[in-house]
Each structure stands twice: as structure tokens, then as C-alpha cells.
Length: 214
Image 1 (cartoon, rainbow, N blue to C red):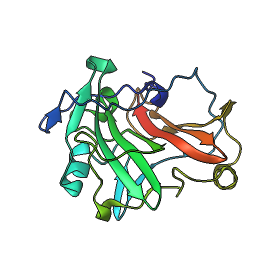
Image 2: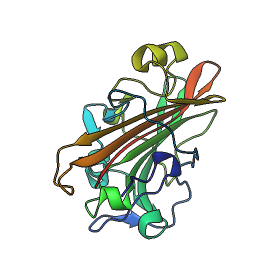
Image 3: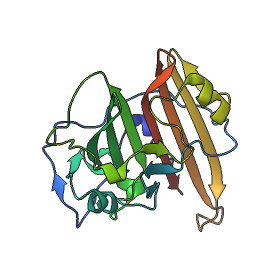
Image 4: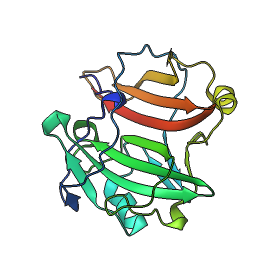
């Protein structure tokens, strides 16, 4: 089974968590054809939220919600096409960002492990009922590689090197590898993807995710 790509934003089901099925701000959708993996290491393994480390496929949405003491887990789609998410708004200096923390149904499993992160800079905007203000103790935000919205193209290149794929203002970094596990005797397949969109030389949209499957 191949991991459903981050860029398709399909995520999953959960039990035993607070769910808001009527949220009005789902994660943005980005579609690209299959990209050949060229990275020798994962471009994204998780998210730093202040001192909280959100690790793909290890941290649950409920872990994040409890740490924030605010926010509701929202849902969209059915079966393998479904996903759950938390949405927050973060204001730092003069920049306002919206961040979605997402769990894919199949990959995230019933525990609702985080599989994807999406963030974008907002030209203007405030926290909303379904994307409340992120508490200050969960800031600053950055990927585990220390990149984030606002990073310059030069910094991205020095950190990640050449992208696996380029299209207009998008840069895509793709990684695939085998990891130990009992999957028909051959281990599991892991895919990690990082999509970055640049505006005026800086990242203004970011999508990152990881999936491990048989």
C-alpha cells in the first residue's frame, strides 16, 4: 500500500477525542503529480511548538490539544479520503500565520497520530473560533530542521540543497526509504515530503508530512 501523498491532504479517523465536524477552515489542498524521491534524508520529521516536539506518527492530535488547552479537532471526508485536524492562528512580530496539524485516517490510525503539518502566512487576519490564537508557550514554531514560514530561499537551499521537483514558485523535497518492521519480511516503506511556496524570495506556504506503510 502506498502512502497517500501529503499534497492530496487525505487524513484519517479517530476515536476517543473531541471532534468538531462543522469547522469552516480546512487545510488548504495542493495537488502535484508523483515526484521522484531524491533526498538522502528526510526533509521534515516533525514540528517544534515552543518546547513541545510534535513528531510525525508518534504525537497525537489530542497530545497537541491538551498542551494548548484550546482548539477542537475537526473532521472532513470518509474512510481513506478522510482527515482530522487542529487549526491555530499564530502572530509573531508583524507576521500572522495559520497552522493546521493533521492526522491521516489510515496512517494516523485510531490513535490519531500526526502525519502532516500545513502553514501559511496571512496578509492580514485574526484568530477565529475554529482557528484560535496559539498560546505563547507553544511558540515559536519551526520544523525540526528549523525552517518555517518566512525563511529565505537562500536559507532553504543551504539547509536542504536541491529540490526533488520545481514548478513555478513551488519547491518539493521528497524522501523514501525502507525502515525496519514486519511487512511481508521486507520492512516498511516510509515517505517524507516537504512542499514550499515562495513569495518575494521567502516561504509563504509550507506543507510537510510523513507516512509509513506496508
